[in-house]
Amino acid sequence: MTHDSDALVFFGATGDLAHKKIFPALHALVRRGTLDVPVIGVAKAGWTLDDLKNRAKESIDEHDDALDRLLELLRYVDGDYSDPATFGELRKQLGDAERPMHYLAIPPSLFGTVVKALKSSGSADDARVVVEKPFGHDLKSAQELNRVLHEVFPETSVFRIDHYLGKEPVENLTYVRFANRFLEPLLRAEHVEHVQITMAESFGVQGRGRFYEEAGTIRDVVQNHLLQVLAMLGMDPPVDHSSEAIRDEKVRFMRSVRPLIPSDVVRGQFDGYRDEDGVAKDSKVETFVAVKLHADSWRWAGVPFLIRAGKELATTGTQVVVVLRQPPARVFDRGIPNRIRFEISPNVVISFDVMIKKPGEQMIGEMVALDLDEKAADEMEPYERLLGDALHGDQSLFARQDTVEAAWRIVDGILGDVTPIHPYATGTWGPSEADRLLPAGAKWLDPDPSEHPA
Image (cartoon, rainbow, N blue to C red; front, side, top):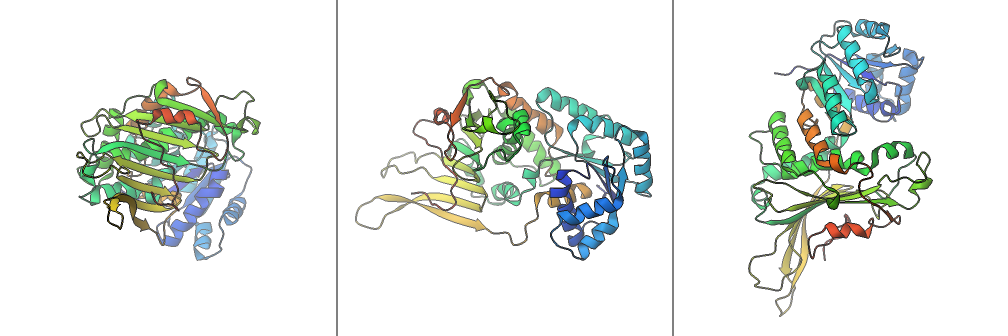
């Protein structure tokens, strides 16, 4: 049985993440009545509690009773993370709290310093720790990061935030799969020709050139966001809806996916990327990648999974498309294969593309889309959902150690400059070289919520 945390500590309280995401999420949790414990910010900025409160006010659009209540809950500790006195003051600010949650909104290089100091000060007992992605830079660094965390916290107390998993449409993918009997039997090699996952962004690196030089598209969105989405689609049914049962099936699927090799990867870089601040003039970092994956499992044997992601593409949108096999007997002229489409953003749409007869004397077909539109009236923002779940001890939407390491194992062999970089014009769908990954006769299916298949 899990218990709610009785205090929330967030390190990096004066940073951009706190300003843009954490304070609005805390405000929303207070407004919903799900946060009523001390909230202690920790940073080395020479700030006072009043400075932190002013920062909170600046980051929240509206002034209401919930904001007033959040300001009452706030505490602040200013000090160096390597100074034991900082953690002595934190222990004092925690007061009677026995089960705090520590949120490390700080660089991973500081994790070891902080978690060891939490243990020495007695603030890690019966506590939880929340860490932000990236969970390492490759498989070896991810294993080292996990080792550092596990010196102080058991895996059951570690919550790895990937904000993408907190999005309602991403959760909906798992729900729709296993709540509808008619859909699940279709998602297997007998019926599926191939699967495409696309995450397209029509914008560039937005002033984050230095970060992107260290990350690239594979590390930024494929290793975490998109492999997690793939696992949601590819996993077998869990024995129940508990967090561990769901995460067991995710990692089982991840382990069945073959590690990528260079021939299964196409990397691209948009024209003008090297002119961005912080980007090397001879940069070989990818802003686009397409990969072809295979899972060695009974369910998916022989089915290629194609993942494509990039910046400065023709539109912004994320979707999963399952392309079904053609009917086994040619009764009518073969049309477009049936497709199951899960649009994740900017709209939430589940679409079934089916062939029907065109009106008239001839037996000629046309493709129509049967759409189910989801319009959430009061959708929670990802950080609100995830921080709330962590406070309650619910790990369902958080990445487990074995899943993180399995994902790194898949991409580890193609990180860095091991494949050519192909230039592409902004506003396109990336380099044409990506077409070679497609099955014979197939084409890339581009996100465009405004159009139905023709």
